[in-house]
Image (cartoon, rainbow, N blue to C red; front, side, top):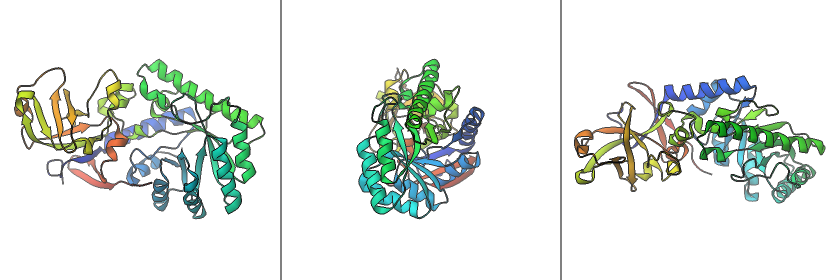
Amino acid sequence: MDLNTLATPAAIIDVPRMQANINRMQTHLNQLGVAFRPHVKTSKCLQVAKAQEAAGARGITVSTLKEAEQFFAAGFKDITYAVGIAEAKLPQAADLMRRGCALKIITDSEESARFIGAFSRTHKVNFSVLVEIDTDGHRSGVLPEAQELPDIAAALVSGGSTLAGVLTHAGSSYDYSDQDVLINLAEQERAGCVRAAERLRAAGYECPIVSVGSTPTATRAQTLTGVNEVRAGVYVFFDLVMRNVGVCTLDDIALSVLATVIGHQKEKGWAIVDAGWMAMSRDRGTARHGTDFGYGQVCTLEGTPLPGYTVSGANQEHGIISLTGGLDSAIAERFPIGSRVRILPNHACATGAQFPEYHALVSPGNIEVWPRFYGW
């Protein structure tokens, strides 16, 4: 099995690059004196998570309870489910805990805290709960200075749950490329989450965990005083969005899609490959950045980027390779039918999710099959 014979499209992990990414982030956070809990939603792969654990990670973060179940069955016990939980999912979470999983869930409202507390009281389940803090207006969470913050804690504790701490995610960092801005966002994320923890402690509640993290802010954090845990996910593979944000280079991106050229539209300067949006995903995250890579950056079979050549268009199973800003009249000679390319993705999480397994390129000629987890 090699890159010339694999059925295409296929998701390829460059294992040496992945390991370098893991080591770089772990070393950085070790130097800042915080525990690292990687977000495994990016890979949803046991072999990848084990490599992160071997490098020094403490626990994992997941985006679905199904992920939690699958990773727990594979031996991971310390798990944070970092998505607000619906009341209907509490029995699933409770079952995991009864089987020995040290599961933490999150809330960001008094209403949610009340139904978690009520379930705890009724079913005698002591949920460990983190309050999600909004430090950048990006998505969900309660503001650090919000009046209801102590009320959320009270609703949890009175119902028999445990306030485990506070958690935030500065997802707005994906929209910037100025490194000073990212440094400031990392400090804003840290300060806001620490402030929320201080308010809860002043109200009489223990707040042992102060958890922050996104790949850009984790990478650019200068100090993490008051924080004891960082979470990040896409760093393990990186992608074109992270390249545009400025926290990696094209040579750091460890995930690509192997594709075969299946045709041409010579007058349009197109080469057609068998990797459309079903392989690359519909994520066009780089479209809002200074450099738009379409559906992906085209590389040689060996993984060397071909400047200017992107997957400029995609149908379900067809991808269109063209030259940005011009028409390549020799496109058929450059990409003959049957030749193969690798395509770097906009969003590694979304592209990985299109495949049931990875083909891990451990070294030239040494490819292993690594399954992915699925489901909610």
